[in-house]
Image (cartoon, rainbow, N blue to C red; front, side, top):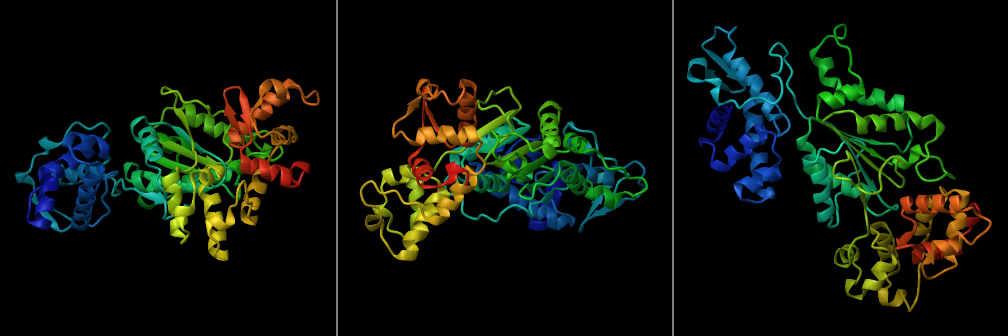
Length: 459
């Protein structure tokens, strides 16, 4: 297999594979990640990716089909079979733009396959299929190096089956996920992004995904013979990465976080299957709320992991203001902390300064809290989802500038202890309150909004 690749590269470039190119191909055949190949070759992952990208381009041009890390092994196995099939009596076989002589090659350089060989009777090839038409085109991803490293480890190395990215609206969940997809999509056979903004029924979404996964089969097999697999079977048969964005639309408003709408209970069943069935795929969930079944504390042996996304650090936050022409030297650490390092909130502030041509020093006097209309709209959408009990707890916390102990919250005879505990758990899951040991605090921006708006009265 390596010799075949070497001949293709030599025919295109006039040079044989160097040591690193060979390491990339050998590692790809063995199912290794770029990071592992880089570690073994004592170089950076970025350099290995660049070498791999150039190899896939060369092989694609020579073979006349799209070659990438996810389908390289399957494609080369198919080519080996085409060249060395015992049923062939030709002296040579033309693959793409290169003729291969049968007597000059031996399949002995093929490493033991981890999977069954593809059926030589089929004309299709295992290629990367992606449908990212619903993925937002977010070009700027402010530094999330640590978070990306964690997610890549969970997806690629730990083979987690379901991962959630959680956090308050505007914190950067979708932006982080788009960056992740761009970096790891070539590790999968199928990659698809679906927005649940319009909240399709699970039956509709399942049919849509099956149509996507079975597209190649529809091309290579007649409709009379082809029977689409169930969604779970595709996830078992192929390495698939599926992203569900705006997952909060599956859940009821005015209820505790993660309570499904009656018509969306089938999603709960599907997520349970993702957790329990043995498969090689990964489902990534993004949204203001997550299913209740998702554990809040990660266990390395559990197939479900959750990343709670926090605000940007001070240095990274300054880039948001610089990008909008705001004098970043006047942006203080306390100001960033006040707005929780939330990228969307900071962008709204920066836009306000830019539109009014006002410097941060002029705009923010001592103890000033500003709530531009765009920021109010963003918070209003989230507060509208709160249950009556959550609103009461929020109202109680809004009266205090300092953290409130659980004991003090339980002193309110109008709310039972059980209801208080359920409300605190739900608000924590939504990212609306902070917990400090056994005390709870409503962050300043949320506290100011809660006091100054009509949301708590049922807006």
